[in-house]
Image (cartoon, rainbow, N blue to C red; front, side, top):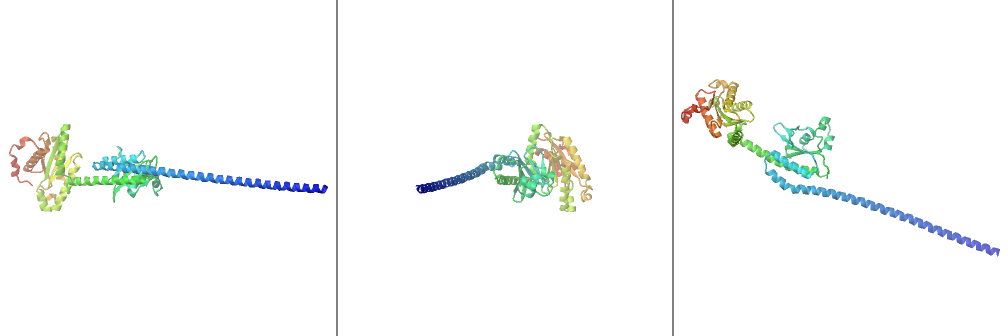
Length: 411
């Protein structure tokens, strides 16, 4: 029995060990499975988070594309109206106003400026406000954008080598400067301040807006140049008679409205044919040019100087009465007679001189045409009295027939 009990005890012990082993194995497998499940769950969560981030990125890009699309669409929708407005005006101020309105409608910025290049002094002059500002080519962001003929961002500007700190500070309120040009012709620069919600297409849009402005400004410039040429004497640079008669009515209407006179001094160069015949037409042309410059120096800017034809000139003096106009004419006559023109000694009087007549609206006549006629009669009277003199129109001086002047030999 004892042996049997021992055997049974061994069998029971072995069975228990076997059971414990298998239970341990089962627990190990369960834990392993649990760990694997946790890892799979974590991987799944990571994939979900990654996909969510990708979705957010895609949504952001779609929003950006939508914003870009909205700005491009807004730009394209406004183009026909802007072009129509630009074609309807020849005034630089109105062109710039339309262009800057387009900028503020398309790009969210509070600062928009425009400088136009003045070819006379090669300076960029601000036309977008009442402030009189100007930039030299190469000065500040505005000037460098014109000099380099490229879009200049604040970041690019600050990274440029060799710029002094004082230069860096110029136009520091601007975020971008865009040149306005047409082919190789520089016309101006548009500057904008910080953009509140940049979409990334601001440079492209500003380039397109600047191109539109360039075409409009070039058209205005070319038409202005053509108009100036049509109204300007090519030899002296003075206004011609076309301009005089074109502006005459405007001057008369203003004088009537303000109750002010318009005086007119008509004169010609004494013995000019003799000067040409003696010294040649080239010297005669130079004489006309030099004399024109003298007239400019002694004449107020609001007056109109006209080469009326040949050696004959007219100075229209708005707001000046006849007596003061006569004083002006005498001063001009004396200055010309003393000027050291080339070959002056070959003239019959020994110097270059002028003779002229002065008349005034409305006291002597009711139109500019009548005033010119009366001043012309006074001019002929001055010639008849020996030249190098100015005569002021007075009715009693011309009691004889107007045909008297046709009997005089005048040069």
